Length: 328
Image (cartoon, rainbow, N blue to C red; front, side, top):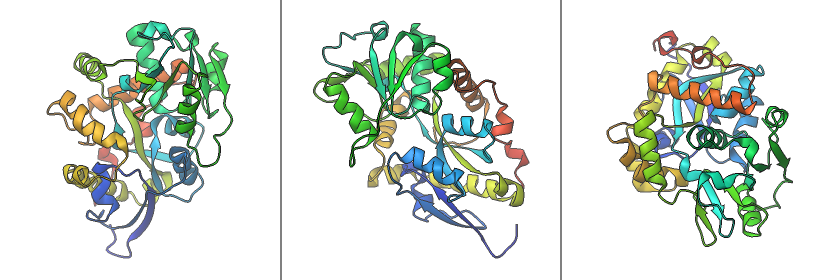
């Protein structure tokens, strides 16, 4: 690795406790002058994708679903085995009071709103409903604010209507909640906690359901992946290892950043609920072990069943093996 000048990289990240030390510069990747951007317009995940695909970012936290679809379509992206957002998804299914939905089977024939049909959380939810409860995507009527990834599903007989953008000053999730409160949807799927008067989780004991699921399957869903432009991997082969090591060092400070607050709301829930389910397993011990490979391959099975992708990729093609990263 050259001593100087340092490689200047800009990456987009969510405000995760696990990456707090990287974001504020407490941890610095060796040989890299890193700029972390956390303030992007809503919908922030779509904006992250637009900026890395458009060349404004050298890397970004990206939906694992969108990463898969864009890379298969030729986007010059490479995944690092850093997963800033992993969390159980049973908790993400919400029902409107008076909808008549008490158990998963009651979703059949119902109207379900979501911000993006092909987002990672939605993909996991449909896979879990299919595998665990025998409820198929074709059993419901879906309403999505994004069209990405819907074509294949429609071809397989899934009913998906595309909603207009939310009014100015309103996020996609806020609009979904508003429409649900007005009775336009019976249920919705969201990565955020939407519990409030008139809206409750399908699984009121979601942590117990998720714990049983985890101890039986060993699966902790991967929602987001850190990706970088292929040219960095090609032209600066030492840089991916440096970034990975810096992310791991940052993750060691997670507990102190949890205490500081000012984080996306899923961090606190993961810290309080998920760590109880996981026991001694650290969700931020990033790497590509057998568990991660199995989780990603299952996720790709779900994307194929959704019609979002036509073939199952190779994990090594999307996440080059750690051994291939040149030493710093």
